[in-house]
Amino acid sequence: MVGTDSPDQAEIRELIRSILADHAPDERVTRLDESEAFDEEFYGHLGAAGLIGLGADPATGEDADPRHEIVVLEELGAGHTSMAVCLVVQYMALRLLSHYGDDEQRKRVLAPLAEGRERLAFALSEEDGGTDIARAMRTKAVQDGSGWVLSGRKTWISGAATSGHAIVLARTAEGARSAIDGITMFLVPLDADGISVRVLDTAGIHGLDTCEVTFDDVRLDESTVLGEVGAGFRQVIGTLNGERLNAAAVALGIARGALRSAVAYASQRQAFGRSIGAFQALQHSLVDGAVRVESARGLLTRAADAASAGDGQFDTFSAMAKIAAADAATDITDAGMRVMGGAGYSREYPMQRYFRDARLYTFAPLTNEMLRNFVGERWLGLPRSY
Image 1 (spheres, rainbow, N blue to C red):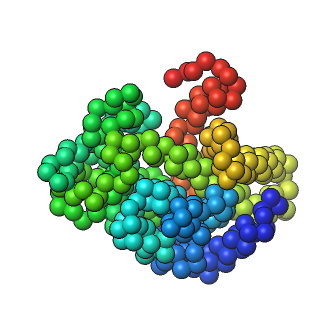
Image 2: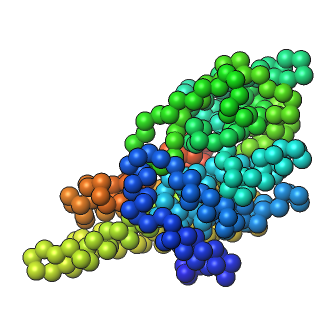
Image 3: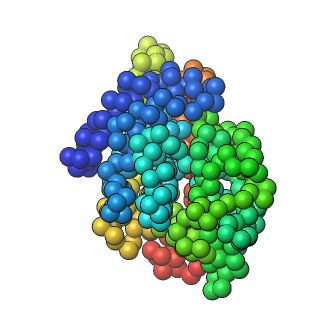
């Protein structure tokens, strides 16, 4: 149990640790990472245990408690990082479908998603648009009779090759007031005619495909619209803030898992007649890692509490938490590689996987540089820098 856990969080943490121990030991995770295969079996176990739905109630529009989501994601980050990244997307999809899906969409997609029988991709980013995607968006949907024709290309889309549906944001009109207007969400079946998916060769997160998705005059009926036409980007903004919080939880898990591995290795590896963990310089680097983990945890807890309470400062706290957790993950994995030397470089050990996977959160879902700009303006009252 983590000292800041509530009784409910402690129960969830114990459950996810038990499932990881039984179904995802390091050897299995390493094997799947090496073969670049998604762990369908483990995903099913998470669904059966209620760790995907997490008590969300679509009938009332009640979301899962963000304080519970971060526990699941931290534990997965420490043990099964690719699955953690997958669940960040699924938690986003659950919120969007719960808030904006109609009865048919909820029955057809949301219910099996919550039970671990369905997965969704979230298609927002494009080759020429990341942070400024609303202005740069080229994917468009044009109304045609009683339906729509979707054209364009999305890239860096997690899970598109192994999911049944994607939530796709496309421009349907020019923005009247700002660039974020005139964008609509669509719930698109990924086996529709005109859709092609290309898996990208990435440095990390090998247990979850990262894809480029092309829409070549894909015909969609009206029932695929998710929420209000033209308001899709505004509808998704709050969920993107939640994604930032959950990304921080995964990064914290990676940092903790890497620290655990480094300490275990330093405790048993012998040099000059004693364990290398007894060497002061090395020991200090591990202590610094522990301080970073607990500092990031404090910000993450504060951000999750703010999200649960509807505190207006949630977006700033989540930005701080993501910066702190991502920095902790990259620094600790770097230190872990140094502590373990050749063993850290070996693909037999998880440290090199932590090292690669941690780099995702230096730029996703938003770069740490842009988040620092945001915090400078919102928290310190400095002039806007972008």
